[in-house]
Image (cartoon, rainbow, N blue to C red; front, side, top):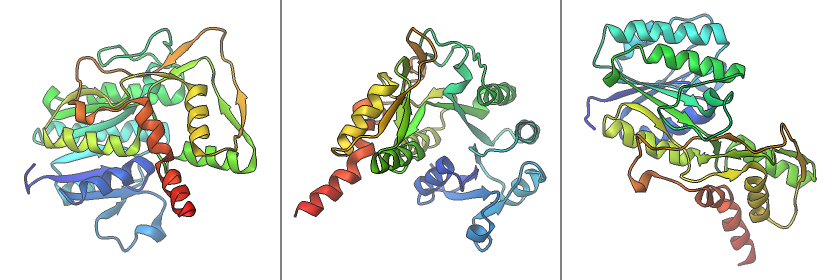
Length: 285
């Protein structure tokens, strides 16, 4: 890490991007973009308005001159792909800039017979998976030392949208969908931020799977989290897509991070319920 590092997080106002910004801002000269939250960011000196459907990213890049760009924004598919084509063209002329692309396990959602490792060839059937795979192909046209692709599994954590949805389902004894035949890997948003910090600090490149070291059935995962949250349970609505187990899971083999930066499903479950345990303890004192 040097004082010269300047980070631009495309999508810095989103769930993943905002956490990454919070992690990095104390260590790097960090900036972000937002799209629709004008009331929240208009007066903010480190967040720039950017709508991939109407704006060129080059204007922001020329002003900031970042050393690292983290792509974690969303946009309609055509604009999303075009924006990354524009990024590629810009970066090919500036080989000192490092691009980190936040991809997803969904690039493997057409092949569910096994968990997927870093060197597996993406095969997707969902629109999300196809667009991530399309952008991965664009990113890989850069020199190898100029990019890092990080694929994320199911992302949880105490403030994650799925956990908020689960808590609401518990509170109102409402339905919560689980997939008994689906085997997943997981992580937390806090762990992702730590891992990205390490990747930037060590100037790592290539493909990284930022996922738990072990796997779990989707229904078991949320049953364990719900059980740890309290005595009440939601109505688990079991959804079966096939009669056999299927994988939507990432595992690491080629590019493993040091042990300190790894996570297990047990640690993910604990992280999803930590604040509730603290609140319960305070209430009993």
